[in-house]
Image (cartoon, rainbow, N blue to C red; front, side, top):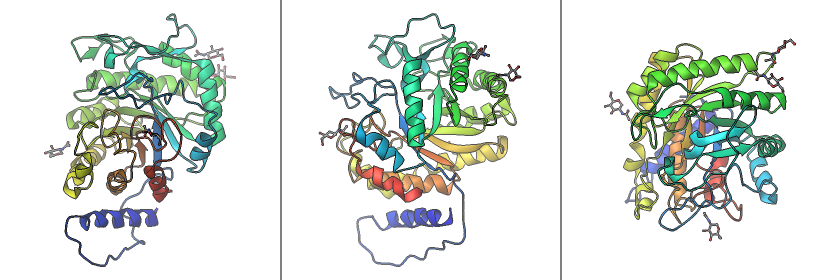
Length: 382
Ligand SMILES: *[C@@H]1O[C@H](CO)[C@@H](O)[C@H](O)[C@H]1NC(C)=O
Ligand SMILES: *[C@@H]1O[C@H](CO)[C@@H](O)[C@H](O)[C@H]1NC(C)=O
Ligand SMILES: *[C@@H]1O[C@H](CO)[C@@H](O)[C@H](O)[C@H]1NC(C)=O
Ligand SMILES: *[C@@H]1O[C@H](CO)[C@@H](O)[C@H](O)[C@H]1NC(C)=O
């Protein structure tokens, strides 16, 4: 990966020269000495669960881009993924912890997400039909994508207060779902547990001790179900924002060999509705502020979980669907390339861009499937 790192370093230096005054200088890149190492499949992009009626300020940028309604037969779609081969795809997002799987002994009816007052993120529970799961897996297989699937980590818990959830995780539905997946011969590279439930959480949170206990349970289930398989998937968690105390605790509670990958989310540009998003994107100091997250996380891993590695499980720059006419345009590339560079500098093995398609930050346009500028930026790092 030496050459790629050299490129990141070059980009890191480049941003210094982007400040107001133009200066001429020369840059010497030492491409021999590696300062950090990424996974061979560093570039990753996400497919979310948001339905078409997820809107912000009367603008609804999601269309039919969710795991359950994406047009898998669109002629550009498979081609766009194959051209990035092998692309990692992470299926997950805010509504992930409300997804039921239509399999095994599931008693609830299999309904799509619906707007619901008082529901987490304003939506009801939703459901993934196995017919759709079959279609998705045929698509993943055909495109050569490496898949990380985010499981519902709130199933069976109860709300203790407005945002705090407690009680044991009920693994029955996930277990049936994973068993079904194995029985069909679908290869899921890694199973992720939960979405943004770490630290203070976003819509909901779960304590690190409880989370760790449930991860031990999930690992045991994976060991049992994959016993006869030559392939063993990784266990990935928590898919949330870094919080030192919470992450330290999680590794201490789970202990060696349970969590293979710590995933964290990064949205360092603030809300997508910010009118001055482009200014932030072109401000090197603003972009560099994330470094302490990356360095603290690597310290957490060194200290409490040297058996695990770090991934950015989801990063879109600006949160809440990204910035309209910003996150899908050329200027956004300054943020994207800069962060790919910072992440790799801190030994991040995989970086998942929010999103492959959907919202304003898609690598592909939601309705036309035509690549946005950042799609081509991803070519930097193969
Ligand atoms: C897994 O699925 C198979 C059917 O494909 C079934 O016979 C078996 O009992 C299931 N195992 C578990 C642990 O649910
Ligand atoms: C693994 O194979 C053994 C022997 O064929 C069988 O008894 C067992 O049920 C299998 N386990 C799973 C999880 O498929
Ligand atoms: C990183 O650690 C330093 C020192 O403990 C602390 O001051 C800082 O707030 C931490 N930053 C993050 C993002 O965790
Ligand atoms: C997709 O492309 C169309 C046509 O160029 C454009 O009007 C629309 O804003 C784009 N959508 C997103 C979410 O980028």
